[in-house]
Image (cartoon, rainbow, N blue to C red; front, side, top):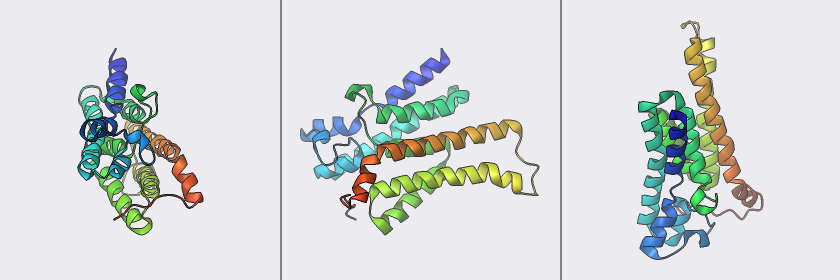
Length: 211
């Protein structure tokens, strides 16, 4: 019963299409017919309504953050499952025939719930790569990969190699491996949701962010 509640609550929270709802309500536009057709904040920004894009970003972060924090409080053993279901809810929402967003903002919300330092690492990496290349897609994929690699090294390799520690306990190692594994899955899924952007990058048709 607990696992079922976590699955449904997390998925439904992640599946709320805030970008579509906000643009429909405040501008009468369908964000799916604008720009890339994505329901995320980056495409909402292409409507010319910066406040809608900012609000979409915040709400998409919260819909990843909220279910994971609640699960951490009441059902911590299902933490990774909750994070995954919230993310899948965003990219495969039942309300939009399973055609959702790319999941970056929701992923960031999940990182905030898991560890603030991971979210800070993601934001820092995203900003640096964006300033250099000016492609949101490149920044998102690279920042996601960075979070996974740094977590994997920090939580598994360093404790084993450090002579100052006795090495991780079996229980802690299982937790960290699960965290690294779920971050790896997120990286693969974000690359998958950006497959069109990857094609555009190859064809040199990808749109740059106007800073």
